[in-house]
Length: 99
Image 1 (cartoon, rainbow, N blue to C red):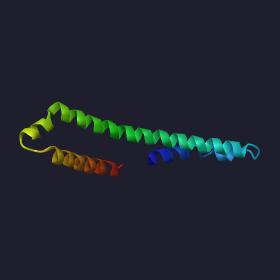
Image 2: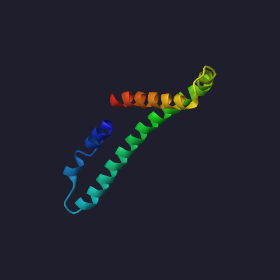
Image 3: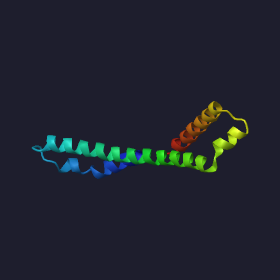
Image 4: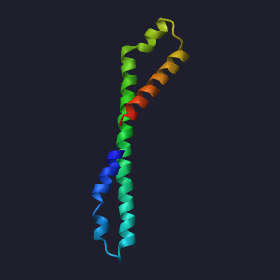
């Protein structure tokens, strides 16, 4: 998300200096909408990478049949899902805190 702010600032840096007084209000609204659009695009990319990683780990769990193996070993459903939730929350918190 920091990258999106830097790109928006660099892209629209000199545009404010080139505007004349007559079209200032219209162009300012256009610039604000463009900034919002670029920021929304980068937010969408950030969330799509996180959700694709989460879906990939669920598919991996299904392929390896980890839930079935844990059920055979005596793990009940509620502790399995609570442990999975705790693991994924901590994993994504650590992963996203670095970026």
